[in-house]
Length: 290
Length: 148
Image (cartoon, chains in turn red, yellow):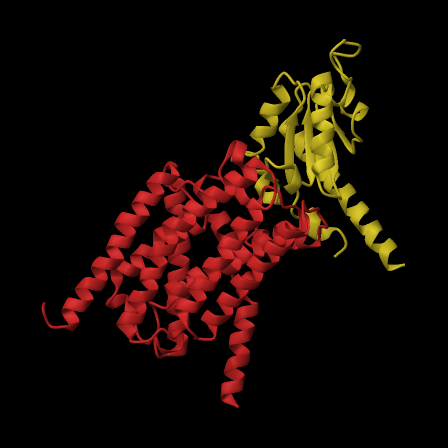
């Protein structure tokens, strides 16, 4: 009976992922406004934007664009469900990756050059983050001895501090923030792969992106697990708040770089940090050092 | 709930149809910390497909007319148009000029006229709030119509 209750609670948590991510993004907007000396919108503003979009009819260019957008949402939501239910983290990561790729396909399915440009930039963004997250998931599995999220016990951040730190630039890129050049860049190529979506279609792509962010935050939180449920919740909440604050500060204090510098930074420093951490952990485990 | 959800998140598209840039500078001032329109949920979007309210400046030059119409047609319904400044509202002081259409309403329907040369940011905010009120009426009426 308790197991059924637990499953129902996890399902409720999964259903609440868009709400939680929406509030986090709202908090990020408030923090950004305060850093810029403005009052800023309500914490619920991102949720209001999404509600408006989902109720607006909008238009679409062709049917495949709609199909890819709904496919991206289904895959990202499935990835979040797999992660929350404590199943295979690698499966969740790969499902999320395919979801991102479907968004690229949605952007490529229309004949707008701006949409194509956005799709190419989204691909570069994927190239910058996917290998790092893949190595992070492999490190988590090596340190805990299992790919199942439910079996990743303890504060793995103590064994994998560099891998956890590498998730911060990944989240910066996924949250579409400076110093990284982003798919939804400024001025003439504004809104990147989302350029040809409007109304409900745009809302669906936003929802897919929010589930994707939920998966990324979920992978980060696998580093922090305590046996006491209350303390576990507090620690996870503090970690998420710290990451949101860090990304807002970095976003507002750094200039924007080119996408190639993003790629170089991510594939050398971030990937290097995770691999170094993995090598040190292996050497410690095999008794070569310490 | 009718219309309230939309009214809390008006996304704006700004288009200059041959203005002297006086009104445009005032529109950009809305984004600065002093006026900070984001506190009302307003966001400037560079994409007609994402926008709800179109802010137009300038008397609409003949070259710009087709582009303005194109942008208006790309915006999803319900959509509203605010003519910002005297040029956009009436075409003044270019009325009768060979190269202007004489105001935004000669090309697309306008919902709110904001006076001034250049229009003040406070009046612009007032104009957008009036547009949002009108939006509430439109969406409220359409959903009531759908129910009955």
